Length: 439
Ligand SMILES: Cc1cc2nc3c(=O)[nH]c(=O)nc-3n(C[C@H](O)[C@H](O)[C@H](O)COP(=O)(O)OP(=O)(O)OC[C@H]3O[C@@H](n4cnc5c(N)ncnc54)[C@H](O)[C@@H]3O)c2cc1C
Image (cartoon, rainbow, N blue to C red):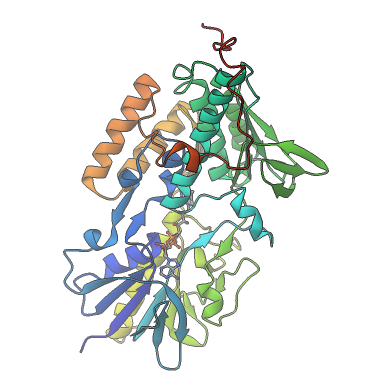
């Protein structure tokens, strides 16, 4: 019988490990709690109505369908029995392994205040993106309804917490839709007056890019109309407001894009973890006391030779997946394992239409050229030919027309609206129906 490799997680790390083990003399089982792989770098485009969920996600079973030695199981891993080499699933079933690769990823951390999540959701899954899209679009709908009924336009406030890539992308995209895609569709409100504020605790946004690119990103974001507040810690979150330092700020929608909390599967492995729950791994990505167990991707904590940690980005997860698969195959051939070395091909972050920053091959790029690089790479790495084509068509359309095609909110009005809000009287509605001045 061939050695059995179980992979937990079909994200970038797990999927790349599976692909590198395809058609090899191993029997692979990939377990994921979702039936789909998500291209997380484009999640914010679903959250801001550019793309539909199906354009950035593919069923894992479909991606791996042609490999006879790989089975895909829909299930949630909840624990491990390392003595008996078993993965335990939520339904009580157990799956045995000879080699185990754990690639459960990470989420944003609320620094011990998990109750903030309800009022300030983070962006990690398709469900998160659809919920964020719902909140953003609904905020405009509620403001329109209120202005129609009362003749008064309320100030719409969007708050994004965290100035890393996700926070910057979300803030830029919300400012962009408020000023372009939605502006002509609403009659009673001027969507362009919506305020988008980004709060970052440190003294720079996108700080890993270095001072000049970080400054450029701030300028580009501000040119879209986003207020960028540095050295501003959010210290509390309540429904429709956040506390920054000692001040409460009104917010119709709050989005959380800071902190890292690795999958609890790291703790379930009873391995040594860092403060964010990432598992300290050996240079070959295995556990010190269990050399047949590997932890990869966002769940792994490993220092590079230059003293920097391997970053929690998709290329690192993909490279770790491939490297782990190769080491398992080396074991089978009774060859020595090789240490993992991260190859940094460069980093980039998009800020908005024609706006981005990038660094690659010792060079720095900003503005339109960085944005084109970002577009090309993201389409290139998107899984599935149909998806690539659909995304390209949608982007091209959005670029030409500034239209956003994925603006559906599902559900009926009354279930959707914040029930806590008092109903607005219709009496005042007729007089000032057109609060927005036509221009
Ligand atoms: C919004 C966002 C934008 C990003 N943008 C970029 C970018 O532009 N460039 C970049 O390089 N990186 C980006 N990243 C980071 C990148 O996506 C991650 O570094 C990468 O996904 C890590 O891969 P992974 O395999 O470790 O985890 P993931 O890709 O997160 O995959 C984890 C998988 O494990 C599954 N899983 C989790 N727990 C269980 C369980 N208990 N049982 C079964 N299955 C489980 C999940 O369903 C998921 O499929 C972004 C991340 C986010 C959230």
